[in-house]
Image 1 (cartoon, one colour):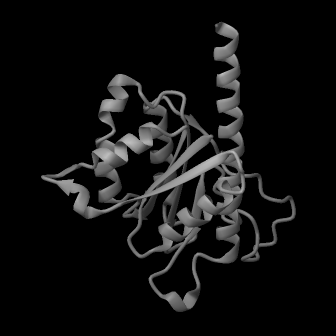
Image 2 (cartoon, one colour; image 1 turned 120 degrees about the vertical axis):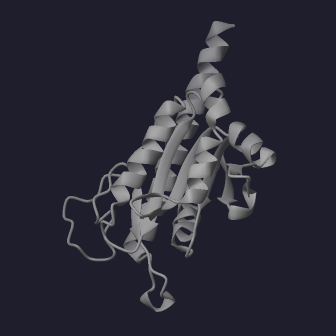
Amino acid sequence: MTRIAIVYHSGAGNTATIAEAIADGAQLNEQVIVDVHQLTGSQIIDGRWQDDDMMTALTDSDAIIFGSPTYMGMVSGVFKCFADATAPHWFQQTWKDKIAGGFTASGYASGDKVMTLHYLATLAAQLRMLWVGTQAPPSNVTGDEQDIDRWGYYIGVGAVGSMNPELNLPDAGDILTARLYGERIAMVTERWVRAQVALQAEMK
């Protein structure tokens, strides 16, 4: 079985909603197991993120999808502490050639979310991972809240959230975009794993 990990931090719950939608989409693939890991402030000890069990689970996965809210134009402090803790995997290249993706949420349609998505992609690149972007939106984008990726974040999912539950955010379009992203990453990862297995068989 192919294993996909989603690792994220969420403040107001919007990023968690997107993480769940991505997981729902990925789980539609019967060949894929999805593990969802939430980062918390309690994992930070003396300024360093520490959770050996979670890090082992991420290392054992075939794909890792990173998620963080956008705070002050960048990932949250909790996520950054986690990212710094991946340094051993940079040195040892233990995450090399894993599939990667990313998502974020903030209170504005733009909100400098692209900075967060670029950071997540850069983190993946430094770890020698293989980044997957979102599904292409339909050609007739109307601006309606049901539209796929109506904000135009091709690199990853950029959702609009709110601390006010009455606004029902993230909206249906953002949630659908996230589900389709999960489906795409599951398909790409499962295809990549099968190709790797076939290659190893040929080399024997």
